[in-house]
Length: 174
Image (cartoon, rainbow, N blue to C red):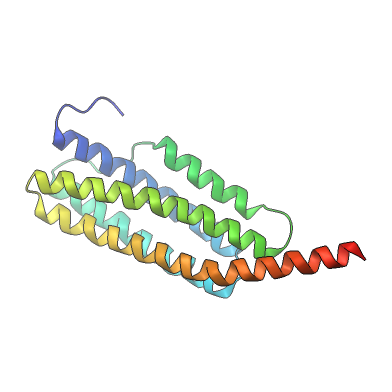
């Protein structure tokens, strides 16, 4: 990202990073959902995929309000987080452990997105771009809800992963 000259260009740069993020996730989430063994995790990822598609549309609306092109700007941190999700999909071993890793990777992305949306909301608010704030805030709230749901699912998945690990260890010890 070039050095922003003012808050407006900083907001647009942040939104372009988020646009890159959401578009990248529209392609990545189906792979995570397919690899997930836990039905609740699979459902949460599928639901969040639908929300992510809406996030793309909201960002496009926000760009239109700001009268600027909706074009993604590569975000190296997000690309790394998405890559981590790809690694989780290919994790060998118990499916419960893979699910725990998928959740960890997904939550890493959610935290990144929540921070970026919070920052973008603050910038848009400072610029009195309240229609943009509303759109970005909706995306933030859905990211936050997805993160909280993943945390709930993680409790069950981690217990199952621990049980699978103990069972595997017991069989291996025999």
